[in-house]
Amino acid sequence: MAQQSFKCPNCAGAIEFSPGTAQLACPYCASMIDIATLAQMEADLANAQPSEENPYGYQNQGWSPEEAQGLAVYSCQSCGGEIIGDETLGSTSCPFCGNPVVMTSKFSGAFRPDVIIPFKLGKDAALEALKKHYLGKKLLPKVFQDKNHLEEIKGVYVPFWLYSADTHTRVDYDATKVRTWTTGQIRNTETSHFYVLREGNLAFDYVPVDGSAAMDNTLMESIEPYNMTEGVPFATPYLAGFYANKYDVDSSQGVPRANERMERSAERVFRDTVAGYDSVTAKNTYIWVRKGVVYYAMMPVWMLTTRWQDKGFTFAMNGQTGKLVGDLPVDKAAANAYFWKLFGIWGLILLVLGQLLVSVM
Image (cartoon, rainbow, N blue to C red; front, side, top):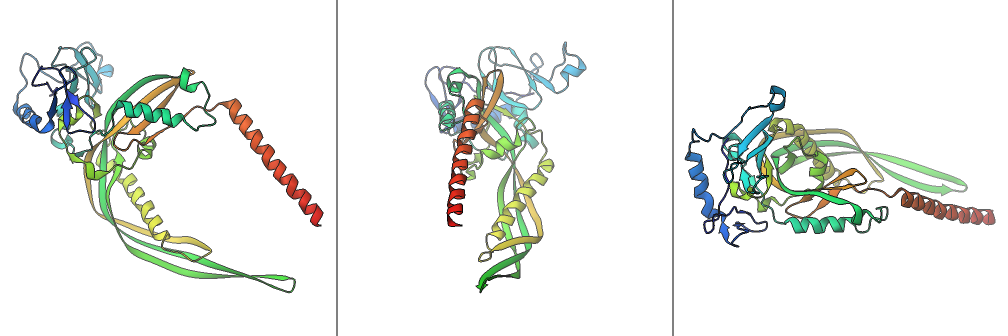
């Protein structure tokens, strides 16, 4: 399979994309190279033919059929070392020389993304966001920040499908208004029911659905939204220095989730237009999704993995906005103390209310 690494035109060192810029940085001579100047490199690579002496691609030497299934082997163009990964691997770093490598065959033809949102925030921002994530967590073990070990932090371009479509929605609501009054010692309640109809059209643009089976869908949706106005046409130099996989969840497989997200949004929008009632219940909801278009995109995500007391914790940060999510451990002793403290406060409140009630009677 074709692969590409980018070299500094000044010192020939391996260069990688610099988050927040439109340039690639050389860590050896501090040169900054515009991505536009590297466009010709991609054109040359597309026209190049692999040599007979050094073919790139899937190999099966010494692996059993079971082991080889789903694996691919690549040769680093800088040191010749072998890079082994699954068949969706799109970009990585050579484990021998650290050279950033992009498997361009994973992003060509039908696999070429339509758009990419470049990393805007670097590794330091991800580490700082993780520290802030610890703050204010009352049930977080006090020693967690000092004793846990950050095992890995890596920038990953995650494949996403972006769905745009028009929707037509019709919802029938049963709404009520409640009136109460007192006649002598009799309390009267009157409930009026109203039939409320809402119908109209909504257009959705770029509804994202994770296209990687390896990524947790809930985690990926939790770090949304992305600002799609900062998306740019895909170019492989943006991948240099980061990990990236091509999609392994087909666009057709993401349609149900995309439709579900559109439908839920439409339901909320139409529900918000029904006001002035004491209760509103949707009785019948009809939503038609039509004129759908799908785009293939790469989104920037920082993945952080930490370990504490032999248990792993994974965090994800939006590489564009800095939004970070992830589960944290709970100090059981602190949780029990918090529960009994809360229980004691509510017990005291109920005791005071009980005494007041007795004194009134």
